[in-house]
Amino acid sequence: MLTFFTTAKAFHGHNGIIQRNALKSWTLLHPAVEVILFGDDDRAAEVCGEFGLRHEPHVERHPSGMKYLNYMFERAQAIARNPFLCYSNCDIILLDDFFRAFTQAAAWRQRFLLIGQRWDTDITAPIEFTNPRWRDSLRALVHSRGLRQKRHFVDYFLFSRGLYDQVPPLVVGRSWWDHWLVWKALSRRVPVIDCSAAVVAVHQNHGYAYHPLGKEGTNDDDLARRNKALAGNGKQLRFLVDATHSFTERGRIRRTPFRRLAVYTLPNLVNSVIFNTLWIRKPLGLQRKNLEKIARKLSFRM
View 1 (cartoon, rainbow, N blue to C red):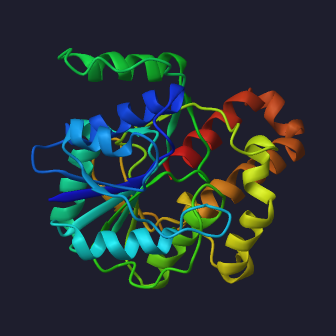
View 2: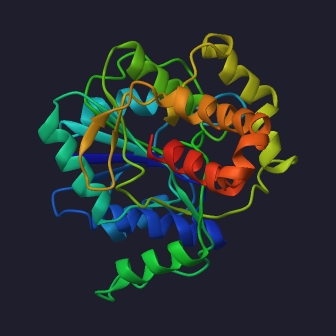
């Protein structure tokens, strides 16, 4: 079975709403799911008591106050009561399709890393979890108003215990730690599965008022550059496109050996073909938009 672990900001205002939404959704995936919340942030203990979560108030911090990822990964793997763990950002709502993907991957292999794209969605109110159709309503909202983010955003990491036995002192709340986690699994020759085609992971949009430069500041300030330096000066960074396997739309796990080539090289190749073949495409009735559509479809399926 599965143990989630995460850390949060203070449970105030909009942050409090979306964090409670995320945590509650994880507890509803299965009665045996365990959730560990790290940090003594304001009202964290109260929320843990309300939802029946395990509260670990102590977490090691950088002098700036940012939390160290390595402490949470080491401690979570030591105390989790389950053989599989999932670190997720505390603004991600997960639905029953996520648990189905997990159980299928666990039946397929004993060691793996499961990651996927997120859907950015404006959610400003508490989810009505007592409504038996809350999942259907949320999916409808996501598909009508949400934005499927690009492949370089990774917000959840489901893995077998012991995979992350050595993690550098990266800090959360800044960029690059997530891409290092993908690289680490690949470096250990552990299958990395992209479940984007099978899972709708809902990222609840929020602001970045905690940083004076907003979102851009979290990518390129001193702490972000420190994270990148700890990741082999940027050499130990991988993305969703580097996954060795992926779920198909029918829920099967398949190898994706040429994925990076398909995602980055194929569109450029198609554009070159489009530009250089106008003389023959026109009499054949091959329109540019149709070729671009085919290229996008092939790239997405990879």
